Image 1 (cartoon, rainbow, N blue to C red):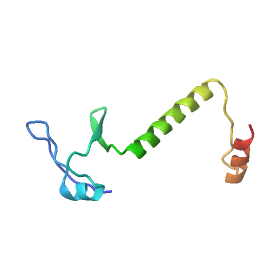
Image 2 (cartoon, rainbow, N blue to C red):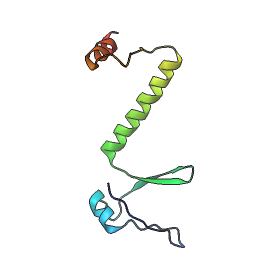
Image 3 (cartoon, rainbow, N blue to C red):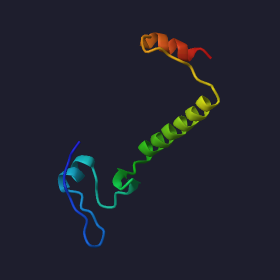
Image 4 (tube, rainbow, N blue to C red):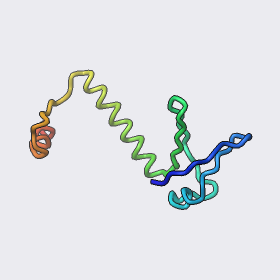
Length: 92
């Protein structure tokens, strides 16, 4: 992970420093999704495969939240081994 400092121009443009661009493989015309989380701005490069994985993860989390609200969940004990937890999850 690279870290750099930049600033916004009067026209609202932000320069991503060259070492960060090179490390991330950012070329001219690269597209980004921009997130604003309580004033913290995040840029995420749009890469089709990764974006599809992110959307699937979001959908899976939303489905899990619905199932939990419906009482469909399995309780695991933190003292259980990974193998015991996997066996518990496979029961269905």
